[in-house]
Image (cartoon, rainbow, N blue to C red; front, side, top):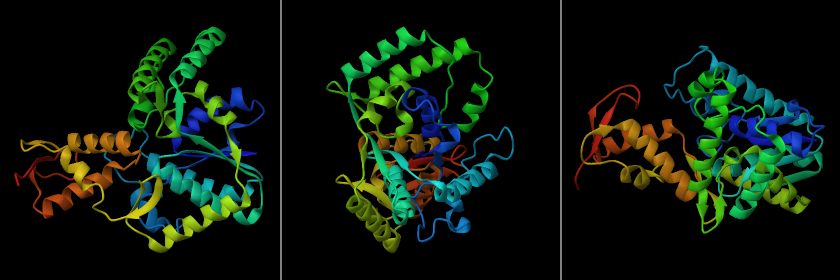
Length: 321
């Protein structure tokens, strides 16, 4: 049995959750694909040259060990090779996340000819009352044991490795309360990625897992082949389905976060990422948005006031129409 997920955050959370769900499972049977197949050329995702710009976008974050990019690339391709070992799979994905939906289709395409059991754990919604019940139960049973924190920032992850447990526990609890409140609508929590779910909530979704029929697997395989043939610059969730879309698909969302007054491009990148994630579930990389900012400038829709190699040092403004 192997669990398959997408991204380091999901992998870290599942490594914690396995103790409650499948105590006999070893951590090395949790495989995380680290590439984002909702962006770029997917005709051959094993082609390192074709995938390099997506897998290692060079976002300009500090590199504490100086080699995290090389390590990430090697881990990803080792994981792709290890898919050949899988004898039974549980794929963890979010219903409205294009990155995870594309990843699931790729994984099924790799496993289809093996004729092995493939289970799907779909992360989507959860009643607030159920979250409160599980959280209360966790507090009673665990009495705040050791805590690990994984974020989307490699630099912050590095610094948190040296934080004392008391600080990590307070930080994790505060972040989780804030995030759960942000995800809540009419008493229902919405999760747009597996990596957003607290480890103690993972069993709820696992209990609702289902085995994919051969017909369903065949449909996912056909869907992946279609996306490969279309090979659009982007794939996004449109009307609840993964669709190929043009490079300018997110331009309106990007423009909506840019003011007519001069502002840091980093703010525009952050606003666009948050807007798209919260409203559409589409996870878009920072370097893709940065490239679209340059494209919008060339199209005369925004002005680059101060140019720079990275968005952290660039300033921009919207041109009044």
